[in-house]
Length: 179
Image (cartoon, rainbow, N blue to C red; front, side, top):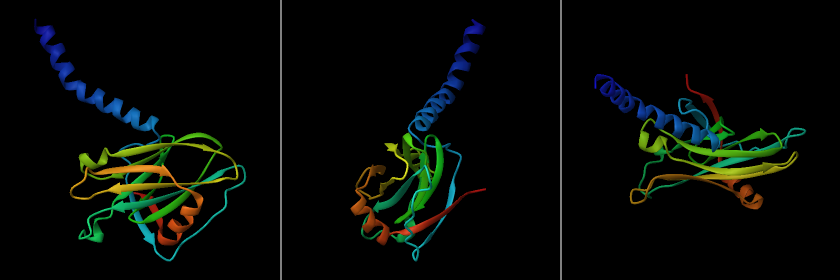
């Protein structure tokens, strides 16, 4: 009887750990990086850089858009981390963008709301990317933080013509991992 009680207690204590491991594995499979990695992001409103793909690589732009209440303060901008195949490649903050190189082939791209609050930090979205060398791809994350809506983050491909407008209206993100 004592052994059964010990076994049940062990199962009850370790079950949340296994559930967290499964959730982390699912997020990595969808393209997200490790939860513990956080970014500091500064934006440059003067930069609206367009770049060309490196030889043998594709170039991927990611823009951030936010849906928020009209009376919300602009200091409440959200930072979204962007992952590719289970590793974070950068982050945006507010109406911003960045770009990165990708090898040709099939990839999983993830956008995740960076927050110290669990209810937000688990919000993520994923998309597939089949990259070809020399091509440019565009994605947009939309963060919904309106009071009367379910908070969320979504990532979706963007038409190249629309991307030109987003580039002109967005600030360049300069990011680095927090220490």
